[in-house]
Length: 178
Image (cartoon, rainbow, N blue to C red; front, side, top):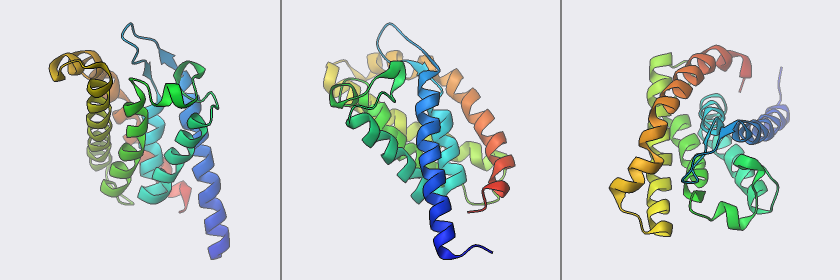
């Protein structure tokens, strides 16, 4: 039987593990010519929101961002530091917080894989929205050009990440015991 202290410690450990998983998945990346790499980070973010819920899933991504902000090389291509985090693609990374939150809020315990996929798609949309607005503000590029550069090429990969994360999240949720 878990006490409140044990549950809290377990959640903190899982929070740290999902921050680390996001860092590892960020390194599994394909660089793109316009500077927004294709990587597996959102896969980890979707799982964090699904398995840890909105509070701890979001906290895991805040930990990840704090690590990046202080210079730990956790971003794609072993990037880190404020210059990278607040650069032209930083909005997408900061969007991980919103993605984890939306996924966690919209994916209750025991949800079907279809509902999990919908929650993850909403999280992806939140990340894309924040990141694209940020990208436009930094670069001065129009909405349509930004979408063509930063969203449209990534949709097939994100659909695959969502499908895999929804199936895996459904299987792992009973084992997390939160």
